[in-house]
Length: 121
Image (tube, rainbow, N blue to C red; front, side, top):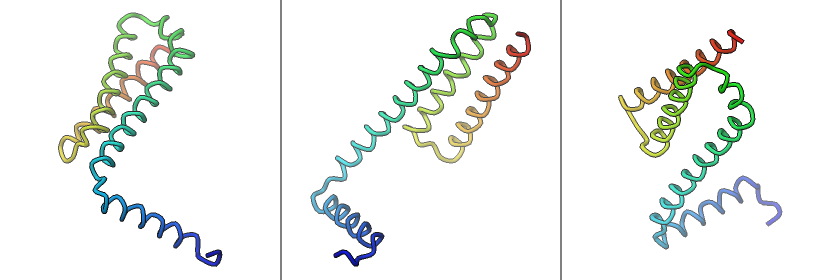
């Protein structure tokens, strides 16, 4: 067993696991776990973004004019909704194009607002 190539050994382990999933009819459980892991990943990204905003961004954004801060927060909020739609809706075709365009516009608006306010300071 020690002379077996690690790639082939790992491939055999993966084949056994896949065969067990199909044999025991665990496709539904696997799909459920996949959705839960996707949700946990989305929540983890949101928590990291919140901590970054709380530690760095909040003090700076509080000094901006009200309109600029609302535009910045709206672009970030729309971007989060767009990412959530991409992760859970799995758009394709025109919907994927619209999602990509919305993400680009959100990034542009957020960066442009941030740079305009940084140049005024």
